[in-house]
Length: 488
Image (tube, rainbow, N blue to C red; front, side, top):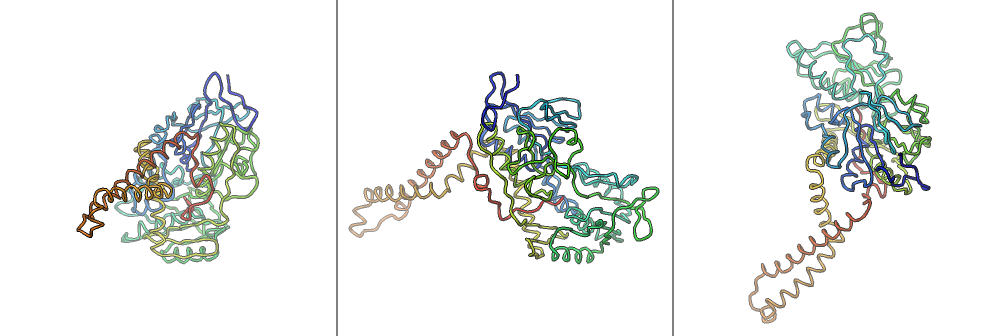
């Protein structure tokens, strides 16, 4: 028997079985949900994660991997281990169909899952119909498959080197990949010809003019040809351009991401672009038990570009709203910033930074991007490796350094330390005789450490007793000043 919605916004606990909450997709937004469930288990629910791969590859570091700056392991987050720490059942499969009216999710294997609450974070797919006939085609998504194909390509051209490589897509993803490929083969005796086919919209459409100009100059400086035309394929899979044709050793497809095709038959209300139509609270406008974030969704109240940064920043709000929906509490809106920080890698440890109309470039920008990317990936890698024990240690350390705990510990240390020093060395202090300053310091330090530890543990106990401990980002919905666009 399926649990029925209660009279408020969410679901009540069913008498026959716990509510089944399914996360479809292991993308950026669902990482935040897994972290939230690890910190505060969603009690009274059965949780399932459906993901095509047990490892998520962080797309923002892919160009650096192509250049040889990162190992593959530095890009990967072990989704299975992260989910295991939260007692989530992991099913390695892809979504093939959805019947939102019947609350049924069909997987590629043929397995059918019923659900009470569904969160869609499957991302999008590349539309490849225009690439028909190109044998050298290598779509950038799925990223894991692309990385395997890239490694195979490198081995195949290890002796002679490639002669011609085309990157199709004038957005941030295609632009960064063109830079990365040029950087990767720049030391070859005969560097390959690299062509970036941007489409009629041109290079980095939608970005500030200063950024577009910086990128154009940098690409031309690396010898990359920019062709502002749409892709045309001739006989035998050759690319038509500049009035002629050419056969490329490799054609990388990095065009825009589109929502999955199966959404069309899902019964969900869709937006003009084919994505799930959602409100500011990330809830489906037609089926209240369905939530969506990232490329699979479209906001009904405002237009948001499909980009990784929105999936990342919507994650904590998605986690909070899934919890609130199950409990019947009020949902919160995701309010993105007006401007997005873009960090565009240009190869050889250089990058362009843009913030609205402002743009700068240099090696320091790349190091900033490198720090942000590594911090993001390593955070979830640590959660996956050490699970709840690591979270408890981290929480204890943070609690000991919190202003309220430090302030209380200082007060306790001042009172207790003064009393101990008065008892142990009061006569010496009054008579002016020599005193042991080490003991005086120790009499203040020990009470401070004891009070800090006790206060931190007390705070932990209080937080664990709360049904949901809101993070600062979730509570205020403020973005980290170092949030950046995930381009690939």
